[in-house]
View 1: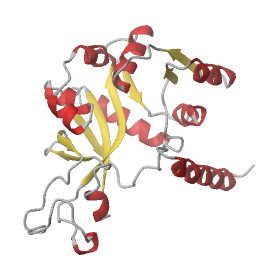
View 2: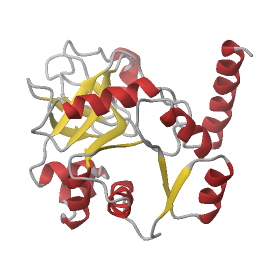
View 3: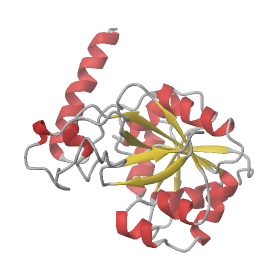
Length: 238
């Protein structure tokens, strides 16, 4: 699966595609397919900490833009990678850029596994949460925090944005990230981007119309992605 993710990343406009891993077997699989890989320490608490080590190993200049693609996203759209990287390049006041899209399923709005984000007028993140944000006070008057019947809960007039877990960083910030103390909000929500915000860093959010392709978190996800991959290969043809 890592090879498929790397192939999708390579199809973007990135000048270089590197797999960061602490597993020699993954590094060997990459080598077998001609993909550059960097072995890292195994004790990193987050993926961003791992990325910081790689940025240092590679000697990237502070202004280099690094996009972190998760290893469980074999169907990621290369265009989305380009969009997030471009968005960061256009926002010099931000250390990070990421993406979001409007939710149209009320069950996902209340699903704690679906991370939501609210932004300011300039498209910078104000907060990320597993809770339904913003809370539509009037539309959801009397609605419990965990509704029993989702079909009876209306979508609010203001779009609820689902965060897409794709990040672009400036290499200089990446090298600083491990030195930042873990934040209470980061630990409460289990969302590492809140560490950056806690310490005053800005995150630019690009809004996309379409939902991202599904990732792989469970064996059932893997089977679904295999079917989608086979279908995409059939559509592309020989």
